[in-house]
Figure (cartoon, helix red, strand yellow):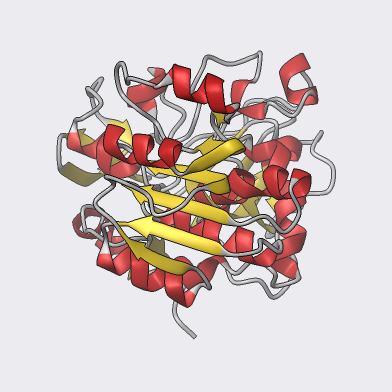
Length: 342
């Protein structure tokens, strides 16, 4: 079968690899229908994270079940589903606590399409067939009528944007929110959509990207063009989304006393933090990965109700065979689809 593979920095090609098979009665085999490029993928394919040899690409996907083990309740052949990008068993202590990103049964960063980070190859969603272990935990069925292309990024980046604001708006209903975009661009836009849908008092969006600012405004945010030197005001809830120390410091300065700062950012190496400021002002700082399998049952109903509309963040859709050439394009949210347009 074909698998989209990164063979060296900035080199992406289709490769023939063995087709996976059911290994356990709790497995499913799935055929990816639409795959979204994650905000982290350009960093993996560029070599910023050192490569450990060729690796499979793609971890955000909507799939069709082609085969299913005997101990997978509620799933049938032909059913469409969103796949958790993190491999998790659903039954260990961490999974029961809702911490499915750090399942006790698997090494840290056990994800599809991220072999440079974990060192383990689980395959990639840009493949003809993918094996999903613990399928009852990792697959969230789609309701009839939902478009796979629209939902391609739900398994990771949509969840990341959602969890960046949801628990904090629950503790501070109607609070104003600032989202600071200084790198990966789709996650903060999904956070805008979630904040608006969940009743934030106002949603401001600070960035130096004109394209991101324009899209944030269409989603209901007030765009704030910035060079990340000095915020114009402080907010009770701030989301840090990017890769630069300057952007992080801007987000910290923009958080009001006793406010909440949620980071959805992955920083490489040591990053300086003004802990004295955080301590003195009582800023509550949260950081960590999203827990995909735990969040999917919470987010899917919001999509079915059209309260969240992930397709509004999509900026480019390409056909399946165009994936090698398109994967390096600078689109905010790229979707690779094998579904023929209607």
